[in-house]
Image (cartoon, rainbow, N blue to C red; front, side):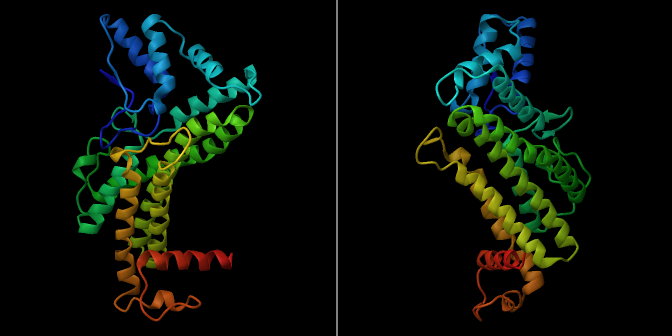
Length: 318
């Protein structure tokens, strides 16, 4: 059994293409053929939309086990994406799209030993695990659920390893998103709806994860207000990730299911966590931070309302 769409709560990719890309799929299935698998392959995927290219490669490998992955990728792109006027894409345009797909696979977070590419579930669930431990005051020892992917002796060491993985991937994805958008200029909106969508979704999750780690550093430095606002921004990132999955029309309409609400749940957990730095820096009266804002009411406002007002005031200064 080979799963293109993994439902594992910690490393799964229910919303995006297989994180290892088509090259990894090619290697694993050719390895299965060389190992003697002849009767059938069972290839698991949930909704087909994130996995169309990999399923195309799987079919080609079944018919021709020594299929060239790069050639098959180009053939798939040539058949799937056209110029806006309906003509075939040029070789140069096809190569730009192919480069984006390879870069997406190479840029994904890799965790464990040996390192393996992980899906967006790693970013949403790991962030919630760290946030929940913080909320409960369980920040001495490592989180056991993450031990296989992030082995460490303490919460701080484990979080530092997580931050390093996510920061490195974030740098790549910040470049990858505009690159993929630019490469798609020569083709129809389908490229934006499929590939750029998945890159943006993973990027939002990475931003939220890195901001969460930064907020923890600010908390330890007793930088309460910045920690409060950074957690708010991280919640916004995961909220933006969830919002991508709520289209009313288009390619992804109806795609969202209960499995795919991780971004919204993570945003809610981080919103709750904002109470801790506010209590440390603005309690017990909960009025000092809002006192400097024009037109602020005398009564304490909710955490997220205050976060929005603080960010807006800071933006106006800039």
